[in-house]
Image (spheres, rainbow, N blue to C red):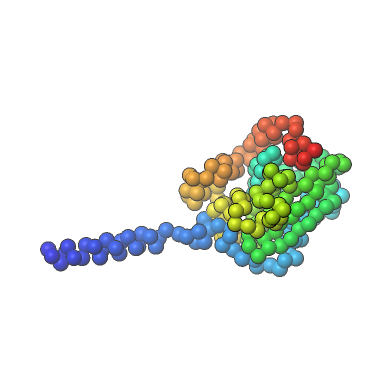
Length: 243
């Protein structure tokens, strides 16, 4: 009996250690986060992808110029924009066609795209011209190991709407920047696959209302997009562009 008592704490520690070892870290498994990846392409690639992305929103650009999207690419645009405005390669490209058809005179004449050594690897500050009315935008691009765009995140380039202090940190390099891309499970795997109904997403979303909202919107993309457009109101551009 004495031997059994002495062994119990030892056995308990073995079980506890085994259980802790089975819990994946932020860079392990299918739920790995984007910041776990390091650039696999040169700076020119990430800059070019940003340029090609804005070509899809520019009526004067080559219509064949498109970014290299991953199959589960997502685009999230913070208010006053419409939150999930792209889900999956096919729907994201289709959504851009709808936008350009609705605003056929749109161009993106001012672009400053740069590459970074940590995710998001591509970041751009641009001015979109909506038929003579300028709209400054800050946008970030997350990539997988193959150099495909896995997540696009956009903000109005207005001081009160950005995730950082643009004067002190114009490219969002500080630790206080709040972005959704670094919280989405799966973007840190080599392929950057997002599984909105997977266990990793469900667990992460339990304590992250914005992530939960993102996951819900992927399940009925077009309906949610239409609802967001109706809810935004007629002054969406005035608020987002600073008109």
